[in-house]
Length: 295
Image (cartoon, rainbow, N blue to C red; front, side):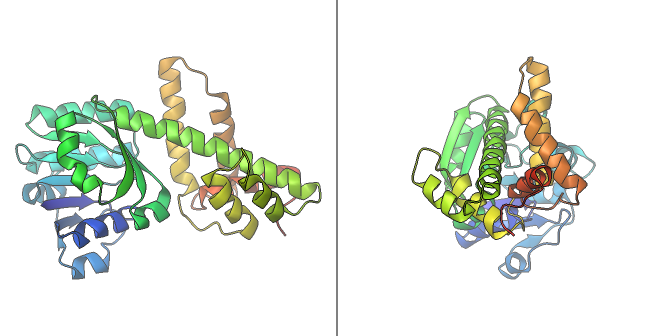
């Protein structure tokens, strides 16, 4: 297939690479970071506008940082909507507002296109290993059509609902769970370390019990080894929790611990940690305890 891909950053770069390796022709547009040299040298074609990408592609994939980025790429002058072929699909794999997603989809569907929101979880490791969890919202027929592409990028692929925005709602829920679990692992390791126990041994013991989790395994190790290069940036996780808290206000739902996790992320950003991996939330807990997990 001819596939447009806009957003070849930390996550999008390997995702686009898997599509290219499978034989699909890529049409790329630079967004913030330069286009990856390996994609261009592998035959991907650089386009001058989002409109040009859409004119040349059967499917346009977006992997962008935030809701305003997606809106601009889709609907600004020379945007995707101006060049999208009738019957072509927009596959938005960004993590953005569920409410905005429903509106974007309505506008694309009205001009004869198809739309599937398909945000992902799994971070850079999942993107590189083709093991992303992908949460989809949209028509079953569109999901079925795009599933072979999704299977090149992920393993756990679910059509959450046939309403556009359902995938984004699921991703917001995912980010609540991830943030609160990072906070729990951070608290546990700070507590254990300050009590005099070896945090590495504590983590090892917990991994074999009911407290075991991917976050304890991967991010617990990051906290101990002090490896906070992203991964998934605190600034992006803050954006996702903003979506959660905003949606909660609209729904009249209380998310008290989500608010606490957001405050801890904000404390990290105040220390210059916008671009730290989100596991570095532990630094805010360490600051309050006046004790690091590991010297």
